[in-house]
Length: 406
Image: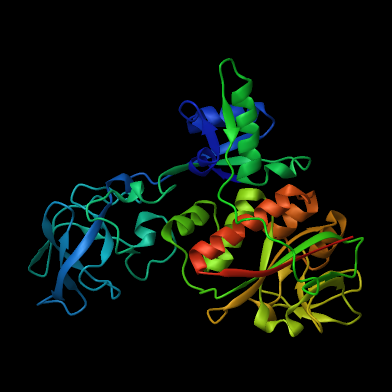
């Protein structure tokens, strides 16, 4: 399990300073969560600034270069850039001034490129080691102020990630909140110590108003299922802070909706799944055992032959997900999605373990379901956290919800 020091500290309410990464590692190891390694990220990013494009023109001697007039908050500099995705005048970019040393070790020095002096470098995600997109430069929000240090605007861009060995009897430690809870309890037990867990913002509690949305036909395999309908969502890239947070933990950002479910997975240790509701027959789900000879194409584009022992999430006709393991391609979220059905559920661990092994699918979701996730308040809080983020980052509106249990 990878734990972000910066993220964990956000989940603690402390009277004094937060423990540094080395101290935190000692605390966690003493609590039975052995820290096997510390990975420091962001060295050199402290020198990266928000730059504003004040002008741009083709390089007179090099067709693939653009000569950019860039304002760094104090002065306007000339910078040569070869990226094809430069924003228009007024746009903001990540700027490495002369003297900066990038995470990969490159030191920025004045350069002359085909007769034009370049006084710095406009950076991509890969050059800053905060993402995998190296095809173009990193575009920043237009409302950010030129000259602001990038690390002051993006939580966790400079961070230490702790690699923790979580034993099978500690499924609560498979999310940042569970680990933060242990740290808060430890700090509170020390002489004069006062610490508390600080929950992230949650969506207001909803009345359950659509009993036809969810049905459980295999109650021995699914003890609780919460379903939420969110419409008016706009699928697009996640904000930089969310992309960086996932990247630091080894996850690839995909889109705002998918990234939100992955963020909650790492925060609460609770897997969630978003279905494109327009692709669900009758717009509802049934938790049932697979039919004999039923098939399912999963999100990894593999066609799988299901057995009658596999638990699936189906619509009114067909299987749409291998429950607790992987979603189905037929109802996956895409750029055209405007309405989703969000799943938060508790599945019997033994059944998930058997299906994951039968289909040779080891996923972040199955890893947690196999060990047991919270079926009470933690399940509800995880769903409400995701709903709050979907409303904030995807413009969604929660219009219906339902709960089914055994």
